[in-house]
Amino acid sequence: MSLNDPDPYLPRQTLADVLALIALALFVTYVVTILNAVLPLAVGQPAWLTSLISALLDGAPLALVGLGLVHLLAYLEPERLRVQARRRALARWATGAVIGFLLLIPLQAVSAFQGYGLVATSQSSAMAVATERAEEFRRAIGAATSVEDLQQRIAALQGPGLRLSEGPQSLPELKQALNERLHESLRSSRSVIHSPWRPELWAIVQRTLRVLLLALVYALAFAAGSQRRDREQSLLRELLARWDRLRARGLRRRLEARSSATRELPADMAYFHALSVVSEPHGSGPLP
Image 1 (cartoon, helix red, strand yellow):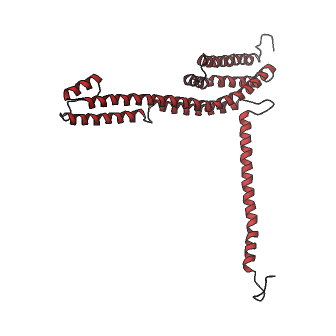
Image 2 (cartoon, rainbow, N blue to C red):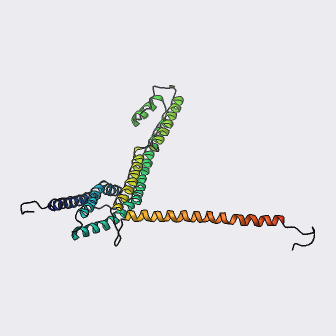
Image 3 (cartoon, helix red, strand yellow):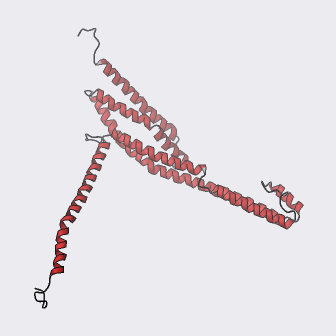
């Protein structure tokens, strides 16, 4: 090979350097995204907690791709000790990321509980306003002394839907009709306010399901790229191997229990059979 020939290892080293820079940029972007969402700190506030969870999940693909690039870089450069040390360090960091994503599930449960509390408070306030408004109309209807007085009182309160031109024209019948319509309006307001199909409640349910699914998916993905200290396999392979051992142990116990029951059955049958056929030699006297 002459001096003018290209180095065969140069393209691989160049690709490795590019992958290292891309991975670093992805990690920095992920950190900046999280900091932008959580600063200033407002621990305990429902909105801040929701922003934190959303930032961790929305930016997780950046860190996941960065982790994958580091593993690919270590595969391309097996002889570079610094690259291998970086891969092992990030693999141990990924173990903490797995725990962090799993902790998002109870964190979202707290956020959902806080959100539901805010919705319940809003419902109670809206219902209290509607009830107070209905009481004002009821007092105005009860205090009216004539149809004209009733018209003036209702107009002063600006009540929607309480039209005096409909129904009977005598004052007692008109008061009864207005009270019935007022009761129906209050019942309709109560059903709307406390409806389980409110958009606020469904938003909490949808967000909780999203966090649950994505947290599990990202936890498994990071477990595939994580590695505990002094371990050769990834955390995911360790968990799968442990699961296989538990399943094999349970299957072995069931097989042993079934085999033990099968072996004991003939002895039990022989025992009960012996009890059924034992009798005295001459039909009297104690058993031998």
